[in-house]
Image (cartoon, rainbow, N blue to C red; front, side, top):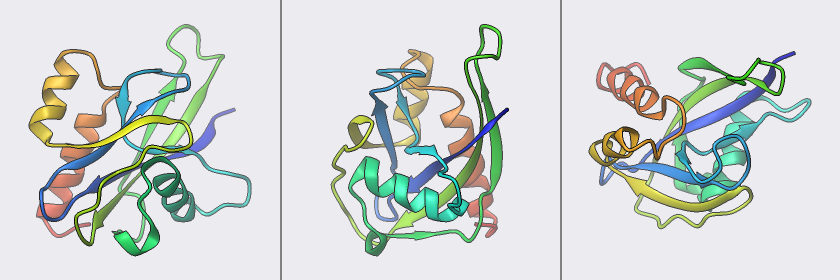
Length: 148
C-alpha cells in the first residue's frame, strides 16, 4: 500500500534559489532532493510539510509562507519490483520571508540553496534525486501565473 509523504519547493524570495537537502537515508542516499518526508498518522498534509521543512533545513514557521495546498502529487516506486516502497508525495510550495542560512537536521546530511541552473547541472550529473528539477519548474510556472 502506498504511504503518504510531502516534498517542499522552498524558494528564497530575495535570491530565487531553492532549498535542497542531501539525503542520509534510503532511497537515494547522498543525492540532493527537495526537503520532505513521511506524513505521520493523523497529521494534515500542510502541517507535515512545515514540520519536515523545519526538521531538515532549520527554517521555522516565522521564516516561510506556504501556499494553501499542494500543487501536484508524484509517485516514487521501488524501481526493482515495486515491493520495497511506494510513496505518494504531495508537492508543496513556500517562500522565505527573508534571507536565512540553512542548517541540515533530521535525515538530511547537508542543506543548501541552489539556483535552477545549478539544479539542472546537478541533474545532468545524476546528483539529484527523482524529478526535483521538473517539480521546481512546475512550481515556478504556476507561481508566475499567480496560481501559487
